[in-house]
Every structure is written in C-alpha cells, then in structure tokens.
Length: 139
Image (tube, rainbow, N blue to C red; front, side, top):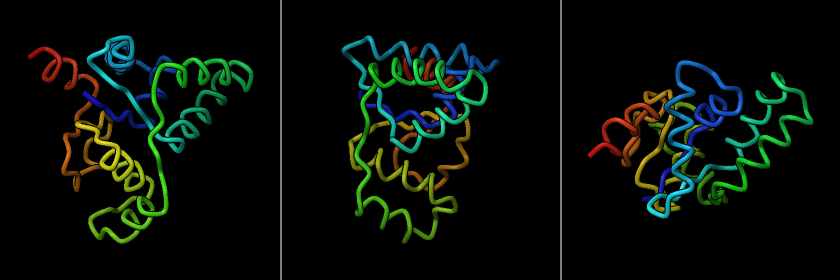
C-alpha cells in the first residue's frame, strides 16, 4: 500500500513533538515493511527540514532529514501537478494542492496528515497518523 506523508507528520517525528510523535513514529516504522511504500514530496521535506533546523540546528537537521530520505520515496511534482493544484477551485492552500495531486498521480491510497481538513477536497483517503494505525492497520 502506497502512503503519502504530509509535512506535519515528518515534523512530529524529526522534532519528537508529542502527543502525535508516538503515532507518527509508528507510521514511519512501516517503511521497513514490504507491505507499505511511504512517500512524500520535496516540498514536505523542505518544510520538515526548516522546523528541524529551528529546533536542532542545521547539522543535526541534515542528519535527521538524510535518514528520513533513505527510508521513504519522493513523489514527482511537475507542471501538470502544479497546474491542477492552481486550477482546482476546491483547493484553498496551493501547497496542500501540490501535495494532494502529487500523491494522487503517484498512486497513493492514503494521505496521512495531522490536518485532515486541509484536504477536504481529496478523492483519496485522508487520515491522521493515529487513525491510520488504529483504523487501517488494525483491520
């Protein structure tokens, strides 16, 4: 199953932000399972790096982001994705639109985010890390 991780999930793991850290970390641990393919976008990585750098400094943030990149895939974001995000009237936040259309075009079944309402327009599943672990994985 292919899963897209939103920036806030990555940030919660990189910065050990409780209370969501425990669920986000469990989601990220699925990268070691052949049943799951975790992915994100370069935009999400940049956002996560920014917040990790603010908390831990540039050197430690680069170490953390490098480990993260080694475990997950990066989805493509291209002109088609950008144009769809820009033209979709339901997309209120362009960044969320870029993430959504990147996830959609790469075949993701779910977007995991701590801000589910940001993806109110989504045609694919949108859940929090806790919901994913308790409702999807637990089945």
